[in-house]
Length: 350
Image (cartoon, rainbow, N blue to C red; front, side, top):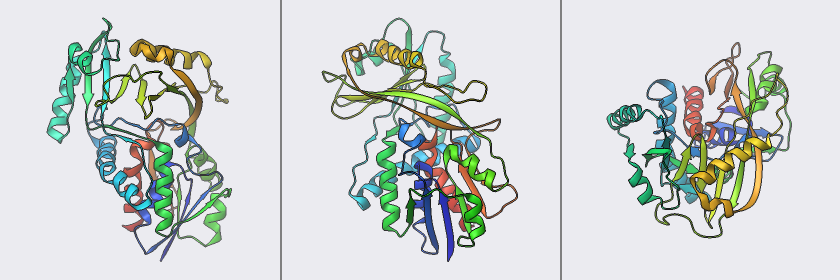
């Protein structure tokens, strides 16, 4: 039996734990100093931008495609096993294109996606208006790109379901426990160590005498409730424009986000209220009725971004073949979680 330790119980660590829990020859223990989904996972909007992304080949596209395919079976599988309801929007993503947007690049992408077996539709302004009556499609919007196979999922609900399902399969969760990677590696209790601690991964790897440079990028978002139903009740995709997302939820509620805020001079990041106001103003310009919505909550979170290398980091820790790192997913942790878990499983069971 191979004994596996996982440090970190956000969406990545929980996905890996569930994936590995299906193999009886693996004895898996997950450590986290906090409850599940308390870090960047709990602050994410769960928008799965795969088909509508411009990644068309190589590792980045392979991870996206693998994850999107897996989500179609993963959500019903987890709901059946745990009895939990996981909010999962299968209405797609509609990206609004402003003046100056080169629509020819979207036509090329749509052709590529068709050859790959995926759909991407280019809508004119009237099509956008007809299908989304709650949107203000003014002269600044020239087209819409609709991706019917992209998704949105509630990151916290998903993580808790993954933990529940993994626990049912025998995974041990040691939560509220702060551990050092070096201590676990030296203890002899585990054959493999997986580091999936988001921003905390840098500290864990440092204890193993390896510097994996992962730095924070702050994002802010809002949770709103509209006074009246908005849009077509039978068609409620995620709306995105200028990197601002309007995420429809149940009960006339929405998530709006998110800002992208970098640290200055390597220091800590303080949430910038002006930037959040700009995000909200852009959302209102797209959907004017949101101006009357009640703000239920504001929040922020730190995303783990690798320094001077592509995200994410999924590899064996240099100099230590028993340690794997699955971290630094930046803004795509929820999107890439299933594919990351599969990659780690293949590395352990190869």
